[in-house]
Image (cartoon, rainbow, N blue to C red; front, side):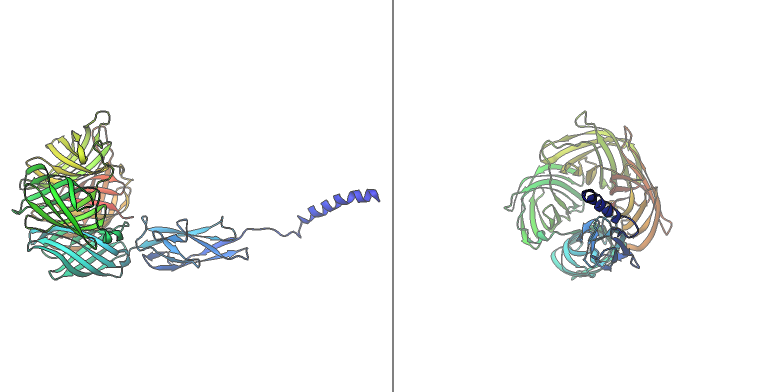
Amino acid sequence: MISILKKLPLLFLILILAGCGGGNSSQISNPTITLVTPVSTVIAAGTTLQLSAIVAGSNNTTVLWFVNNIPGGNSTVGTISPRGLYTAPNVPTQNGSVLISASPQAYPVISTSFTVSITFANVSLSGNYVFSISGTQAGSPWVTVGSFTANGDGSVSNGTEDINGPSGTSSAIPFSGSYLIDANGQGTATFTSAQGSVTMSLTLNTQGQAVATRTDAGSVATGAFYPQLPTALTLTNLNAPYVFSFTGADSSGKLLNAVGTFVTNGSNTLTNAEEDLNDGGTTANQPFTGSYSISGNGHGTATFTDSIGTRTYDFYIVSPNQLQFIETDTLGSLSGTVFQQQSVTSTTVFTGGYVFYATGNNGTATYGVAGGFVTNTTSSGNINAGTDDINEAGGIATNATVTGGFTSGTFGRGTITLTGSSGTTNYVYYFISPSAAFLLTTDANINASGELFFQSGGYSTAALAGNYTLTLTSLVGSTVPSSAVGLLSLNGTGALAGFENTNKNGTSTGQQPVTGTYAVTPPTTNTSTRGIATLSTSGGASTNFAFYPISNSSVILLGESGSPVIGTLVYQY
């Protein structure tokens, strides 16, 4: 009896082990999930797509939904409900698509997913915007700056604009309007006020901005729409250092460029105000005085008093970091951008590679330059590697090696000297930030202004790939003024294709197919990164460009054939 009892625990153990295997065991398995692919995986911005997923192997059939790995998504990538209803964002994401994923709540470590592509729609132009458009109307300088609300349904409300043109200046003109945005982000818009209608061709990018060109008969002008921060409408004061770049004509019709800086102190007075002017070839560096006031709803007025007199401006607030100005007196037709100066001190200097452009005139000839340079960090102030391209009234100086130097001073102001095969050009600059600055020529013969940017990419043909918005603008004083906006797709191997709407001398061509090629030449010890491109329209016309990449997402263009133009490519997605 005792021996049998001692063997019972071993018997129980054998029985337990036997129960864990064999044909009568019950297997433990994980749930599975399957996405039911919808009929179409391409939807318009702002629309919805109903998705479903099937969970098997569990009594818990609840599904967890993700957009770009974000539970439930968000306003940038779109949202998805617990029942799988996906709502696309108003603006396509930066790569034009999102990844929708589903996991079983019972076992969330597994998932299944697919990609949804998002196209542009009317809702992609939605909210408050500030715009600035400048050029010519009936052969005379014309500029408008204003704001409006895009309702997302193709209608425009709350429009207010200032115009400085052949008929004089007009402030706070109410207007209404309409627009239509295609799936690729191109579209049209019409603004109508008591002074008539302005029609435009547009191209949107995924940052919510749009580039625009007028398509009215007899006018040539380009500009941009900027999304306006909601806080701009309630802003009551400014309290920061700012830098500005204005261009236009003086009272006699001569080209006038101005760059400078001022500080706002929250009490409507400008301090530490300094400017550099180039008025028809006459240059000056001088202090000025000024004041400003904000009237509410994102609008304001300002006065600048210098040796020429007192100029009055209206401005529209994009954000506390950006203001768009327009002159409202009889002294000229200046307009431009004011940026809040960021992280700039008296010791801020150029370090590394930069690209730049400037446009204006040389006497009566049109003048445009684009280029790049690298500073020698072992020898402060030296520029020992650079390249530029100059288009002067259609006469081209291409791919010239340049050298030079720079100085720096207080309030972010300094000078640059560049010497190449076409001679020496002197510039004054004002830092916007350590990676960007406004430029102005200070030579008696060349009157041109532009910008300078730190170069952070785009060093190869393969680096430039994707969809890019295109803008082209003829140089000041062109005998055949022209402008264009469009959309180009670069394939990363040197081929491009797309569409553009061109306005030549006041006659719009409508949307035309474009094909072409591009190639990037990497930098050497003596030159900067530079590219060449050719654009050909369906009518057979071809234009050659030199270009300088700022980064993989933005490029400066300078026309080297046909009517001289300056332009940009900005990444859409």
